[in-house]
Length: 291
View 1 (cartoon, helix red, strand yellow):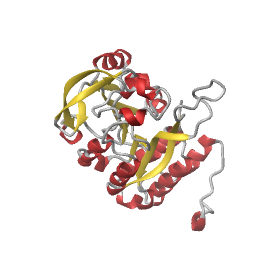
View 2 (view 1 turned 180 degrees about the horizontal axis):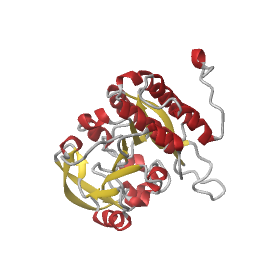
View 3 (view 1 turned 30 degrees about the vertical axis):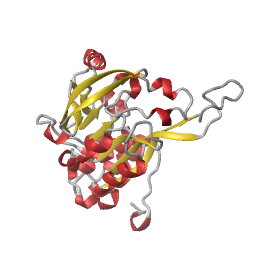
């Protein structure tokens, strides 16, 4: 599909996505629309051999996948659980899991393996990173703390957040949110919200209905859009692209494109072209509403 506004944006390279915990069983990644249109590259990390092979077998020309377990650089024990999606370096908290229907079974540890980890900042061939997508069952905070140099250039982080502890010693939303804010990111949107039934209630025989307990969410953070002047032209370009193609955030995309046009960093036709691609009018609030 042709996007004239993308051509006018004239980014020097494709948007660079890094996916830590790229296991394909977790469903389509949020950046898939960009990847399908040839607008991004993907560097994925997946230490589980079976999952890594699935990724390698299906990889396109703009994708590469590496076997590293990203963490704090130390050696840890990987707990392989009954449900693959709960495999973690953290020990499942049996007492807490038992409070949620079926979760004690999902978190049953089937095997344990020693695993060396690599700091994100120590991956020498990482290349640029605009979007970090991460789903590592509790190790997100450790990776953020050991990837500050890489994250300094990123403009978006798509991370799983936990609101209820599923693992022993697992950092929850408040701690992870504080770390990302300290690194210059602000919460943008909840991409998904996972609710689960509290045990032992099963109403009308429907175990996965009639519940409100929030346990996890996929949350998108972006570099503070109130300080676009502190970002490079390339960063604002890629933030605009991610806002549109990954999150459908036309308001954030417009703010980025308007900033680029006003500062002379983009063709002045880029915003009208964006509006045309949407099939909608775009008015700017305040003193620039006549533009």
